[in-house]
Image (cartoon, rainbow over all chains, first blue to last red; front, side):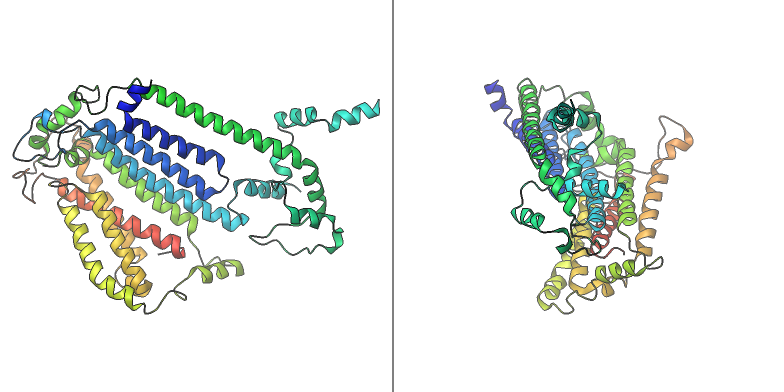
Length: 125
Length: 330
């Protein structure tokens, strides 16, 4: 297991980044830090996709000098997927931050447990 | 007999059973585990505690609740410890499983990897002839997969709409609290009037940033870039201008009405331009728009106008996010 992991070092790093983001998502109670963890997970996914599209010793997929050989360029498909991912990540981050602001205005706390307690207290007669 | 019953009711077993049944929530009985000043306060008689109206950022002091909290504090501590242990274990398990999968993936950067299949070969070999774009990625996302990009623009637009719904402060429906929030959020009162350093820097930087953003958008089919990155650059230029000169100057040319019109017309043009195949229902329909010489700025058919549309939507959305988060309106 060790040698293939070292050969696929970029994928390994992206998996570890993903794990760090997921751990932040679970262990932190602060909503802002949860959103940061989510963004780290997004970044790990971009890294993984970009790595999957790369081919050693080839150029960016922009046609120069009329060369249209497959063996000259890297894979253009993952680049487009990363673009989609970035846009969706920006949108969801903005939405989550707006929701966090509303929650803070309503309950006066960024701590998720604190917010849940306040909700339960308000439900009680 | 009753003593045994009491023991059972106080035992951890019943509590866990109740918790599993969902009758009590351990979290509901308090979150602070050991706060020394809180323990001191709990020793005070109840009448000494102030009882103000609840406001954001203030805890409701209740002596009875605090007593119960002290009793259940140990359970919560156990629960939290178990939760942390379980989540660390879960994360390590996920990382281990994913790393195990990575060790079976094909080697990095190898041309024979299964993702370098006939799809990307087709894009590279005939992308220039079919779309007219020198940048193959732009040709891919704005011609072959143009509906995907349309969806992305709509996602951005819908996200800004949702943020508008969530953060908008409306003075019209206003009770006193809404008006107070409006006054607090309206930082035109507080923003620096004449920050000379920022204004001089912005005088130099904003035109450069704008020109750079327009360059990226217009050259999206010739060089790295395109609507999304150029739009983000344009939006950051607008935000810098807003920070330097304030809302009064910005609202001479960019209000909510302008935002609505620009975004809607860009999205509508995109939709109409790319949905001709829906209306005609043809598979091998030729668009009739000349592709031009590859490498010229006016080439590659619809890609340039579509890039401009996407750039406008992205720039407006970035600016809208900033103003909404800053003062709850545009």
